[in-house]
Image 1 (cartoon, one colour):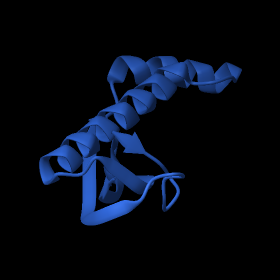
Image 2 (cartoon, rainbow, N blue to C red):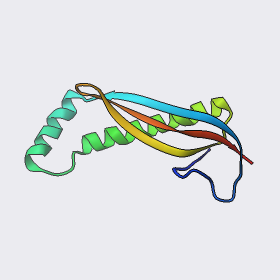
Image 3 (cartoon, rainbow, N blue to C red):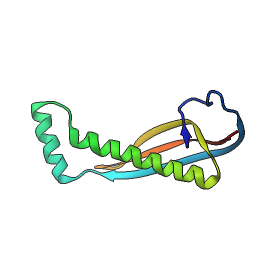
Image 4 (cartoon, rainbow, N blue to C red):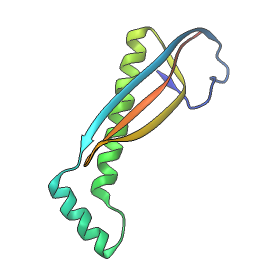
Length: 104
């Protein structure tokens, strides 16, 4: 599966536009991670527990978007983006979305 943030793939021709493809995940913070993050907040530095959690969330939402694209018959996704939104206190959604297309 070709995934790009641009609106086209160099050297390839879009023969059909499938439409919106998406994948998401919602993650809640963990009490143990909150304690470590709080300590890091006091002494400074990167909060690696949250960095890892958000990276895993992006990968999971990206994989779900690919599955949605394949299910709809796309072999590429163009104009791919991520967005994040707070669902409730201590929980956030990561959404990966783009335009599913068929390349020649």
